[in-house]
Image (tube, rainbow, N blue to C red; front, side, top):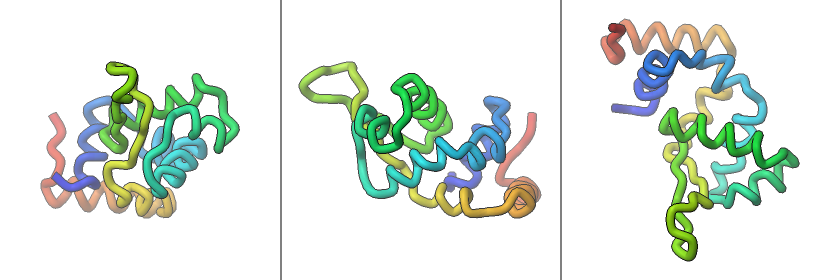
Length: 118
């Protein structure tokens, strides 16, 4: 399943508003744009974006649940997710769309049969 369909499926499954909760949340977009440059430790993301740890961690957990990013374990401290990386840079294409373009894209994908509502 491509990223566009995956985003819509997760949003329907978890009741996420794609526009408000993902695409137009400025801190999530800042995190995604940073991750476009490679993987980072959560502490480095916090430092570079000047956000508190709790805020960064909540955004990271949300983006992980949406399957947009992945957490990589620290080999020296097993079980502790430290590194974060972007699974697919295509998500940034969505963040550059207007609200109306996002609505149209969602309709197009649903009408193509890429997502089924239950």
